[in-house]
Each structure stands twice: as C-alpha cells, then as structure tokens.
Length: 146
Image 1 (cartoon, rainbow, N blue to C red):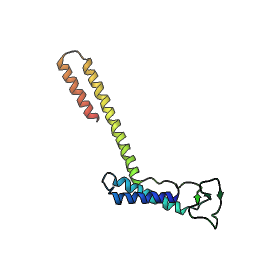
Image 2 (cartoon, rainbow, N blue to C red):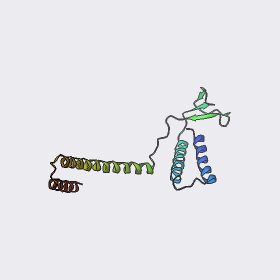
Image 3 (cartoon, rainbow, N blue to C red):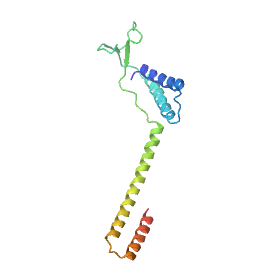
Image 4 (cartoon, one colour):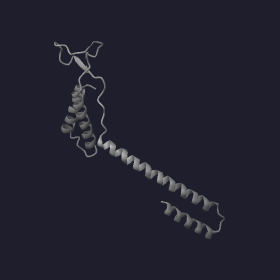
C-alpha cells in the first residue's frame, strides 16, 4: 500500500469517527489500534527510500524520479514492504489464548476422570450401598487431582 493510500485511510478513520460519532466503547479500541498501526506504517514507509518509480501504474519504470515529474503520476516502489510490528493488544490476546488452552486441557482431563468413574458406577451390580461408596470415592479422587 502506498503512503498516500495509508494517509487517506488514516484521514477516513479519523474523520468518520469524529463526524459520525464512532466512539462506542466496543469500536473505540479497534479504531484506535487501526489508527496507531497506520501511523506507524506511514512513519516507517517514509523512512525508506524508493528503489524505483512506476509511471501511472503502467510498465514504465525509472530508477530516479524525473525532474519534470507530474504530481501523483509516479508511484514510489520499495525493495520490501515495511516489517509489521505486533500490536500490544494482539500479544495480550495470544497470552490469554494460551492460558485458556491450558485451562481447557485441565478440564478435559477432569472430565475424562469423571466419565471413567461414572462408567465404573454403571458397571457395578444393583446394590445401592456399593454405588454410593464408589461414587463418593470417585468424587474425592477427582477433587484431589484437580
């Protein structure tokens, strides 16, 4: 994406938010992150030097910008796109996902233990005293392991 396109997108995000009141608590963090990412990308792109110039999105290229260049007719081309830096909110979400995965794994293990205990209860004879004692032992064992 060209610097001009990024600046236009940034202006649109800021304009629509201010003019149309897109400041709801659910959309505000997303908009702020997008604005911050665009500003960082623009700043990084402006630091790079173009390696070539393309005329009106055609197959005409030059290594340097001509002195008689018309404004907006030549598009700068770069060797590599700017490297994207991870957003702090993204990193936080990744950490939360990891913690959730660990908690889900623990729950699955406990569920497996409970299912095994229930199957043992079902397989026992009809004597209710035995059912009660096995159930109590299974519950106690599950509590100790979790």
